[in-house]
Every structure is written in C-alpha cells, then in structure tokens.
Length: 84
Image 1 (cartoon, rainbow, N blue to C red):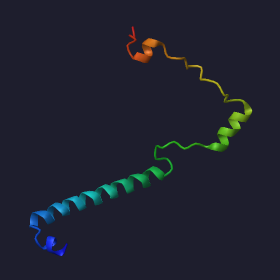
Image 2: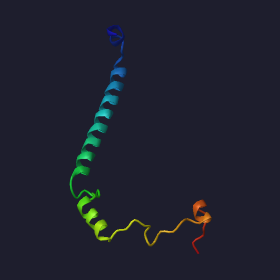
Image 3: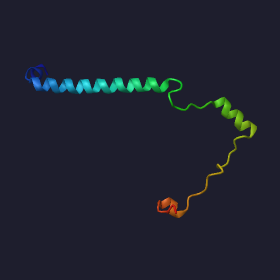
C-alpha cells in the first residue's frame, strides 16, 4: 500500500482533495438543513396529536372521505380529461 501511495502524482492528490472537500461540503450542507428543519416555525408542519384526538373524539373529524373527494373516472385516471 505504501508503495502505491509513493507513486501517486500531484494530480492524484489534488483529485482526492477535491473529492474529500466535496464530501465535506455535502455533509455540512445536509447537517445545516436538518438543524433548520428541526427548528419550530421553519415551515415544516408538525402534528399536534392531543388536538387531533380531541377533534376525533368530539366528532368534528370522521372516518369518511372528505366532501371534495370523488373516485377518479377512467379519463381522469388516464390523465386525458379536457378542462373546458
């Protein structure tokens, strides 16, 4: 292994440096994104289970489809229905 490393050229080391720095930048970016996403009010919706359960128990939410829901027709399923 050491013999292989001794025969590396400067361009090989530069390439490894670019790969390593790219990996480091990706890790830092993803870490920062996860920290921002975990903050309250960052745009991610959170589910309040206590409020949801209370609304289900009072009957405000029911186990049925929404009023706007309807089964798709054949044309809608194929995506060829015209909107005229």
